[in-house]
Length: 83
View 1 (cartoon, rainbow, N blue to C red):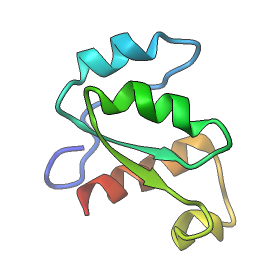
View 2 (spheres, rainbow, N blue to C red):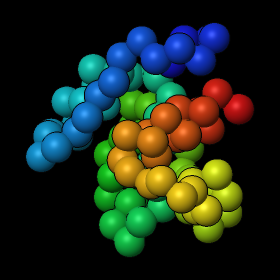
View 3 (spheres, rainbow, N blue to C red):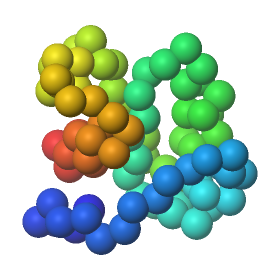
């Protein structure tokens, strides 16, 4: 997202080498959900990125959403990074 909140690039990570992704976007901000396995992902990304960890239960906009999918979650995580 740019400073105005407009999406400039979407990155979908599936079976990717997180080290390569993190190096490519080094210095950027990223948000991830606090899931049962987020520690390993956090540790890998944190070497290169400024990471925000979102707790679904404490992030009401995500936790109580009627419509919930990865794309909408990602947009809300982007907003978290801007705060």
